[in-house]
Image 1 (tube, rainbow, N blue to C red):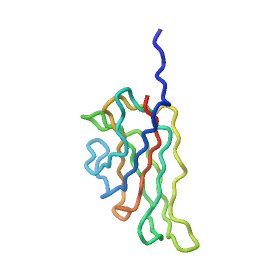
Image 2 (image 1 turned 120 degrees about the vertical axis):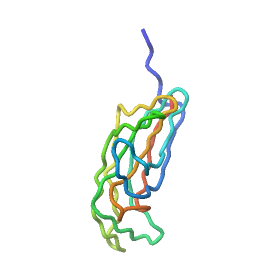
Image 3 (image 1 turned 60 degrees about the vertical axis):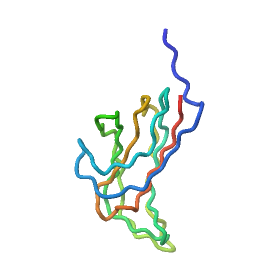
Image 4 (image 1 turned 180 degrees about the vertical axis):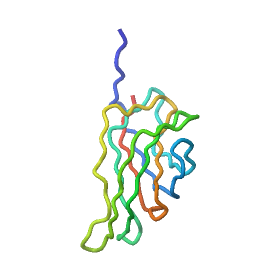
Length: 135
């Protein structure tokens, strides 16, 4: 009987700010690598998306963040995270997605978690952070 891997040895967290709008969900060209799996694999526990700028008041437009698993050759669309339109100010908080949690987002050795976004108006505004554990 095989033993289950233990995913608690080492944290593997990563983050990236997403750039240009994506134009393909099968052969994406504007993805950002968030994390790469360790030698024995990695389990992604949570993905957060926030609007960030140096001005402290980023304005987002409605769109999507695409979450891909990349096996080194092929992109596999795993999830979509909805981005709402928010005009941030000193009294209105910037956009922040409800954290997406996972129990089965497991990356094999060498695979990576990559993200892109759908709207040109959100370029360089959306920061994706993943919290994961290596086996």
